[in-house]
Length: 466
Figure 1: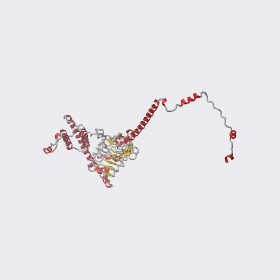
Figure 2 (figure 1 turned 120 degrees about the horizontal axis):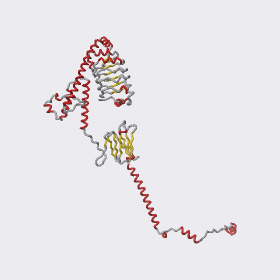
Figure 3 (figure 1 turned 90 degrees about the horizontal axis):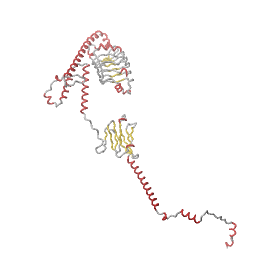
Figure 4 (figure 1 turned 135 degrees about the vertical axis):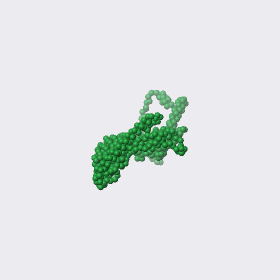
C-alpha cells in the first residue's frame, strides 16, 4: 500500500523547485494510492490535481482546497460523489471509469457553482435510463457532460421530465445497491473460504495476503499432444502456471474488490519474479583494469570523449575528459598514478595509460565552468629527474674540487720547509734588525744651495758658438 508522503510530493514538484506550499499543480497518477491525504494541509494553493489510475475508494481530504479548479480521479474505485462542497473554484471533475452507482450523489455538486465539465462515462450509473437527463436537470451550472455540450433545448426538456426521470433513477439505484450488497457478501464468503482452505491444506503456501485465488483440481487436464510438444518443466513452475491460468480464467464481477484483488495479485507476481531474477542473476564480474603482470589497460566504460595533449613547453600532460555538464562532482573520482590515470564516473572506470611517467603529487584536476569537462594536469617526471641529475652532478663536481684542493693543501704541508724555494721574509726582517740593533736614526741631508751651483757653473756662450 502506497501513501502520499512529503517526499513523493516534492519529487513531483520539480517544476516548482520542490516547494510544496506554493504548488499549483501536482500529478500523482499511477502511484497505487489507496487514500487521499495531507494535500489539503500541505498544498493549499493547488489548482490542478491529477490522481487518475490509482486505487482510491473515496473522495476525501480535498474540502480545504479552495483554489482547486480541476480534479482528475479517473480509473479509481470511487462509488459515491462526496466531500467536494468546499472546493469553491472547481470547474472540471473527471470520474471516468469508476464505480459510481449512487447517481443521486451528484446533488452534492450543486454547491460547486463554477462547475462546467463533468465526466461519468464508464460508471454503472451511466447505464441507467434517463441518466443524462437527470444530471442535466440536477446541475444547471453544467456546460459539458461526458465531453458533449449541453444545449439549451436539452436542458429545458430535462427539466420538464425531471420528476419522472428522478423516480426512475431511484428505482434503478436501489436495484444496483442491492446487487452491490450481494457482491460484497459473496466476496467476504469467498475470502473466508480461501482462508480456511489455506489452514486445512498443509504444505501449500497462501498468496501475498493469506488468501487462495484458485483451485488446482478444477483446472482442465492437458492433452497428450500438448504434453509431447511442451518441454519439461519443474513441478513448482507447473503448479505456478496452473494457478496463474486458473486465476485469470475464473469468472468474477467487475467490482472495486475484484479490481483491488487483481492489482495485488499482479503486484505480488511481479515482486516474486523480481526476487527470483535477483537470486538467479549472476554477479557481473568487474572490468579488468590491471593485468596479472601489473600492466595497466586502457578502459573507457562510460564511453566519454577525451583528448590527451602533450604540453612540451610546460613539460606536462593535459587530459580533457568530456563528462556530462550537469553531473555532480561528487560522482567523479580521480586517481593519478605514475604510469596511468584512472577516473570513476558514476562508478564506471575510465583508465588511460600515459606515454611517460608523471608526478602524482603535483597533478591537479578541475571542472570547466563552461563545458563541464574534467581537466587533469599531470607534470612529467622526466623534468624532475633531469633537474635532480643536474643538481647531483654539480654537487659531485664541487665535492671533487674541494677534495682535490684539500689534497693539494695536504701535500704542501708535507713538504720540508727548508727545501722551500721561496725566501723567508720573516728571517730577512730579523737579519736586518740584528745588523743594526736599536732605533734607526735618519740623517739630515742639507739641500744644495742654488747660488753655489750657479757659482760653479760658467756659461760661456761665445766659446760654445765657436
